[in-house]
Image (cartoon, rainbow, N blue to C red; front, side, top):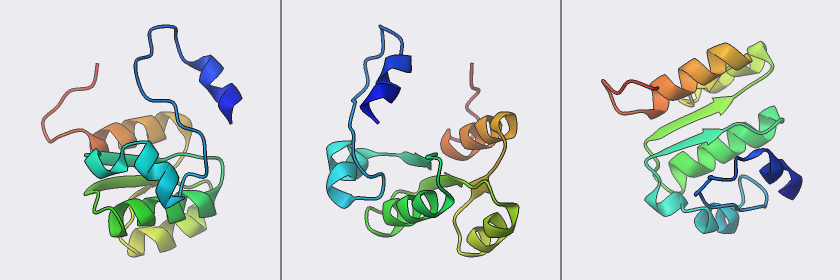
Length: 107
């Protein structure tokens, strides 16, 4: 939602795009074709897995991860080849480890 952008600091220099996270036009507008990584972190498991699969399968993004709230679903999605993460602290750590280049240190 556009209101989510209010949480960004005044110095945020990134692109602000609103839309459905798995819509191909929305993803293109957000720069998916140049993306080195994609994190699907909406509040819906189904939306996240669809977005992650679209990023990987339609746009060939190599580093993709999806946040999944339901651990039973997470196991299924892992088998589909989509890395999944859950819980806030663990999610943040796993997202960084999956998306940053090997050997990079988050600050």
